[in-house]
Image 1 (spheres, each protein chain N blue to C red):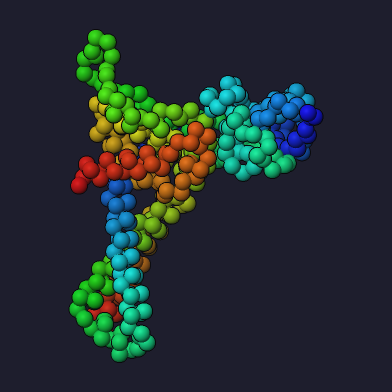
Image 2 (cartoon, each protein chain N blue to C red; image 1 turned 90 degrees about the vertical axis):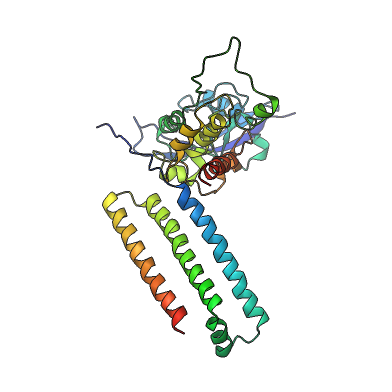
Length: 236
Length: 115
């Protein structure tokens, strides 16, 4: 077992020092046990501590280390180095304001997420223990609740690039359907009203970049289709 | 300045549905036309004239042209909405698109019924 050299081309930008962003060529040695892209990035950070990126759980649960890896959004912590063509080109998530290097400002993304009220609304008196669901009703939430809000999908969506302030985006719409589909929620009509807008929902042109990049293998396009289906049900 | 976005136009479904339905109409018409071209070989002027002389073909053609105009309206409007941000310019483009589509529609229907 020997060490392996991993070559990188990394987007660098420090707004306090750099006039404009540039790509930095850099390489790092990794041990045989260090197989994920994040392992190499952590080693790079030791080599050059000005390199900035977000990471936390390092196992694909927190969604912090989403970045554009060789042109495709993904999580560094669950991407195998061996699957990537070198030099590995790393850029911040597309279409978002860059704070520094691979760190982007997620304000707009979370604004859209909050706009769909990501919590169960139920004004009826709460039961003594908890609001129950049948196993079938609960099943409807599978493939929806697993979203970790890494923003890989929304920032790979051209419709979100053009209208991040008006289009809710795949992540937000997946979350929207998660609460529309929840039988414990009593505001389904308000939720549909909230999305009945040429921008908020109907900017989705079924490009399906979101499905292509989702590190949790979720399907926002399918959720969006189900929202549209419910809207048709309401008028037809 | 606080940028307050006005959202919630309360339309969108109608246009989205319209685009899908008009697509089905156009698909049916295209298949019909291809069927004619393949089956009635040597589509001569006389053949075309006979085909377009039938009232139901004219009606079908007119409906398909209307479907095309409606379909194009939603599609082209979406492009303006995506890429043209200044409101005045966008509204002007919307109006011009409508005028162009209505003019094309009237002219096309006149041609179909004027043979």
